[in-house]
Length: 191
Image (tube, rainbow, N blue to C red):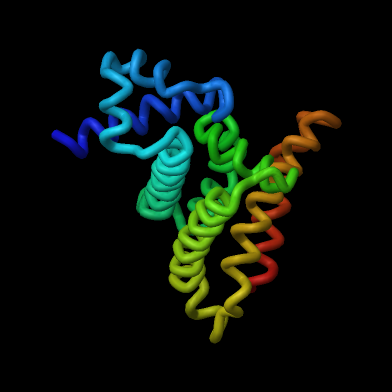
């Protein structure tokens, strides 16, 4: 029951933080949203900042679970899973608004050390998934995978997301071509 309540607070806080940001969200509002007293939130979290960081970690876990689901989808060929992974990030700003905002803060150098650690952890976990996938796909075609290759895929896929945002301003029709270009580049690199 206690863990369920804590998760309920985190999920509710995630919605509130995504809509209004850390600065404009109060613990009173979060408590009111789930019809509990503010003291109940303090039973689980020492501060609004701690709740915010736990919310970021929770959203990171959800993001990683979605990536794992993409790569565990045996109905798709492995190359199609890679393409799905790249496509998945095209809507990260809508489904994972807190992570998206966190990346923007990092680019603006407005993030706290805790936020940077959360992003670092997220990207390291994502990199481990990509490493496993690339090892399974290309085990017969490449003898030793360069340790930087999974990192390259993760960083480039995030870069592709932001590039698509910029490209969408210029020409919406190019969106698909950017995704395909990244996938073809990866195929060429590994062949």
